Length: 283
Length: 234
Image (cartoon, rainbow over all chains, first blue to last red; front, side, top):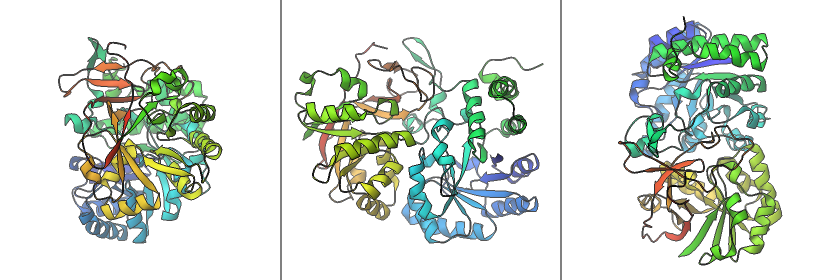
């Protein structure tokens, strides 16, 4: 399993590629992107510099086009994407069907990758993507290993990428969730709410459930492990270190029970997890 | 205006025929949880008992769930007896287009409707035509105008629950999809926070709000009603 990590700047990409990421993925400001501009590289030139850096190290770079945009902007988006592909971009992550069709028609010499926010939960959907030249699909973070066997072992030769620790993502199915737009706030799903006068938090999986998903996806044959772009890069650095150690455990062939036991200790080595669960820092 | 009653598998198994009064259509299934889909026997029974037409309501789907729906299509439809399916999953939509276009009438569900809304209009018109989409379900009163450039398309309005979010991690039993004790049935949680514009409701695996007012719009010719558990039953 190879690590694919999100970078917001050239320096972040440099650090991630030097510390175990096989690929980095980046949005570029003003290209359609699921997150806002602060999580993106600032210019196309910065993306090209990241591409050169990655290739010098024998690694790869993905460009994010994982949001919808107005039809009038399509020609410009396709033109800039073509230029970035020509400069070496190895893969383009796409959400919208219309954009996927446009990029396929443009015959880009790069891998088209279906975004997790396209919500592919079954192998039948891959049949739609196959004629469009899709090479990889990123499974939604609420897709589960026991349901994804036919996607991972698909007959089309498409690779699969799965999330590591979705607790840096939203709690609910993204982009089915419209709460942030309704309240005009970020991650409403994580607010401290009440119900019947008692504290209420939207339900999400606990630590053993999260770790079990990682273990099972590894053994199901998913090829790529995705680390989300985090607003605080210090969090992402810790998560990358944790992911490398967890992959080392998996490659060593530890049992599921041992993975959950050891993995839980590693999980709480990430300070954000420690804070969230109210645990005291490890000695 | 057509009136439809929406029931999930468990509600269907308990419902009394008196509840059908005033409804010419039955939406059977769920848009957010695969555990609430009807089995083949439920769908066949509904087609026999319900006095009007039964429509299959489906969420985002896993492979085994698509297999189960394909069994319903094979057993319960024919070119002379087309069934209507509310589709929220691209894989199911593509399956219908490829193998069952002559046996299935396609309505897009609330999740898929939001994707159509943001598609470039020319692409969206072709997509709707290619996939035989005749109708879209909505629950947001501000949305009808967004679909007005699709000639011949009809809209259904879902009420009184407007969804705002959904999860596949069961909020009632706190596990990923798997063996289900139907703990959500007959229950609804009311959620508050000072920043929420109104009380948020948790029903099944969806969060949403009440939308009691049905907008008047020439494209809306069907209302789909569901029963909400009584206030306070949490």
